[in-house]
Length: 250
Image 1 (cartoon, rainbow, N blue to C red):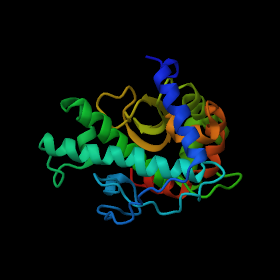
Image 2 (image 1 turned 180 degrees about the horizontal axis):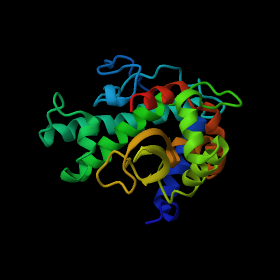
Image 3 (image 1 turned 60 degrees about the vertical axis):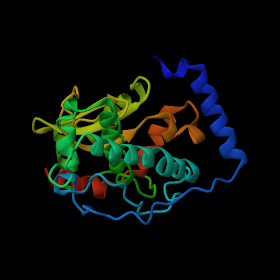
């Protein structure tokens, strides 16, 4: 079903927007969650595990690209719900999280329930998304090995931006746009809902180097239905240092 055509969903989004504008939300901060498995490298070294990690910046750090209220709701409500439901799923389905990494679980996600698929993907995707953001700056661009690979595989950084932007803008309904290392080259893809390229069900499989959340809850309070404006602004807030570190682990 096209989510944009669902009247109940439209009413929910409208009411959430009004409430966000007219009230001051008091939301929990997950700063007490342990940083188990976190490192300065990509998740091939254990960076993204089963636990929601504290943000390394304030909710208003990404402004004006992403407003503080959206960041707070997104992190403490949406992403926290994925992490909680993932914890329930791994317990219910007897996953030994000490011996099975989250990427390993995702690589065999077809063997698990829809709850596991949706929430393992949702948790992984959001943990990558938070790490890939920083305070915005103009002329933001990658460097080093990653920049060289982008030049090789897309002919230019601008050509890559155009292809990625198109994938993000044109993702039907809710989902993600990705820069993926697949078959020894960088490619752009997109996935529906909370799927990602690590999953054995993905159309384009590989290592997700960078991901952009294009669910409406990621941008609706500031951009309403103007997803292209959100995507365009996001380029200035990419933490290319972190993305380069991820790429260097491949």
